[in-house]
Amino acid sequence: MARVVVVTGGASGIGRAMVRRFVDGGDRVLAVDLDDGRLRKVIAEIGSDDVQPWVGDVATAAGAAAMIEAAVGRWGRLDVLCNNAGVLDNLTPLHETDDATWRRVMGVNVDGPFFACRAALPHMLAAGRGCIVNTASAAGEHGGRGGASYTASKHAVVGLTRNIAWYYGPKGVRCNAIAPGSVLTKMQSMVPHNDGFARTAPYIPLIPPAGRAAEVAEAAVFLASDAASYVNGSILAVDGGWTAY
Ligand SMILES: NC(=O)c1ccc[n+]([C@@H]2O[C@H](COP(=O)([O-])OP(=O)(O)OC[C@H]3O[C@@H](n4cnc5c(N)ncnc54)[C@H](O)[C@@H]3O)[C@@H](O)[C@H]2O)c1
Image (tube, rainbow, N blue to C red; front, side):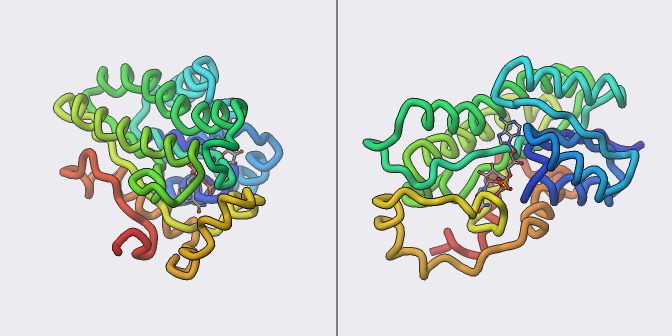
């Protein structure tokens, strides 16, 4: 039976590549994003009834819950949740971080996965199986790969992933994260904060060439598959070796 997959941030970059890859693998996918225009373009490009758009804000409890209910309402089950939507803080150091930036980054990157998992878990537990794949980052386990709010948010995603894995693994729900390094997406077109960039600049030559979104999507698809049946609580670096040294 085709699996039912929810992918957030599905209109662009890594999420868009995940949507395409899950559909190509025979799954039914609810592609979720705030950006209606871009999302409809992605759906049209894929051109399959097995992918449906859901325009909404995952940073709100109501938005995340409605998205899960939309998938279950349409296809009657939920097998995989990919919490991938995320926003950057443009390398802003803590003393320059305004309240709105902190709230937005924490809202999308941390509240989003929390709200979505809270809505999804009852369905997965009722079925006795399910799989969650969060998109963390190299900034989720290292201090110098983003600004203050982005780094804090991705460390939180790592903690959330491990806690869910520990608590729900024995109940049939696996939870893992991918930790991308530098990936060519819309996110990379941000204008960095001057001081944050200056602090980062000496390390830039050490970053391996940027990866493609499709290469990152493969890692998520693996973690969501039965081939990863014994993988739970892992943070899988997909960074060309950036964090290996
Ligand atoms: N690109 C990189 O180098 C890189 C590196 C490490 C981690 N990541 C992570 O990968 C994930 C995807 O990033 P990307 O590079 O593909 O970025 P992207 O900007 O290309 O795509 C992110 C998508 O998320 C959507 N989104 C943002 N806020 C949302 C919300 N509240 N509700 C619903 N959708 C929302 C955006 O509209 C956008 O389509 C993010 O979690 C990001 O932190 C990216």
